[in-house]
Amino acid sequence: MNRLPPLTALKSFTAAARLGSFQAASVELFVTPSAVSHQVKSLEEFLGLDLFVRRTRRIVLTAAGEDYYQAVQEALFEIDRATQNLISTHQTGQLHLSVAPAFLTRWLLPRISSFYEAQPDVEIEMSAETGLIDFERSETDMAVYFGHGQWSDIEVQLLRHYQQVPVCNPSLLNGTEIYTPADLLNYTLLHIPKRKDEWSRWFKQVGVPYKETKRGLYLSSGSLTTSAAINGLGFALADVGFVSDEISTGKLIAPLDEFLITDKSFYLVYQKKRALTYPMKAFQSWLMEEMTKDIASQKEEKQVGLL
Image 1 (cartoon, helix red, strand yellow):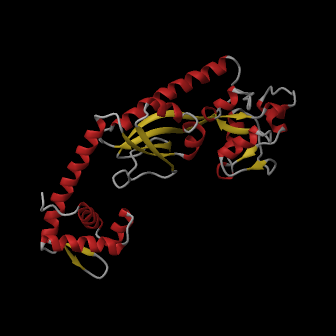
Image 2 (cartoon, one colour; image 1 turned 135 degrees about the horizontal axis):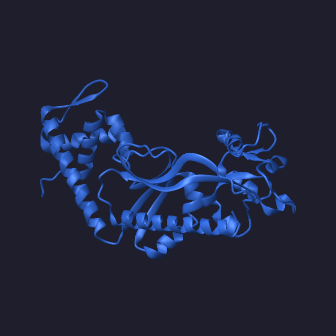
């Protein structure tokens, strides 16, 4: 055991070998290129062998380096697998989550306290991300994606479909009833510039002629249009699951049961064939249970006329 080289040096070596560059390895490891070069040099001195041939713009493994890389890569993989298996058998650990921003702020954060109550020994680190995760190089364990569900090399589990409905503050109507979709043309519509076709698609779906004009308020995100609707500034198209609390408390109403049908949904994803740790299993189970409750609650709200 005394002949084992430092783990930091091995990580620098395997990253540089896989990427073919000290610069690229430094980006992946969040250190400077000189730090990676120093770690590799110290490993070569420890071994008494050259692992790389250093050229002007790239590095190339020596024959010894190639043999060592294959063996070390497999050993590090076994260490990672043993660690994950150990964690998965105990009710403690850390979970790194990457979540679509709207899902994080409007759905997950208002409910996450119930997960902590049920799993006090699980620590969650969350970040809001819109891009795809490279699970092999990232510390992220699981992610919530928004899209069509067609991603390769990851496990994909449907959470919920994206369903938008017009909502407003009850005070906006001032006692007036909304009978048909055409009635909404008498009110300010809240728009998102990067999704400017949503209202036109909704009116086309319900069979009402609509020509988009600059009338209305333009905001940069769905969270902002929802906030504007809560403050009585107009009608917003909002995902019903994201505004269920506001609807149940009367801050918002959905006077028309006409949903914008889209082909996008929210999905829970993680690396393909990965052994789930206990925190991952616990979060997955809790998330699906909350989704089931959410769908049941929406059905009840429809029955009593809130939606």
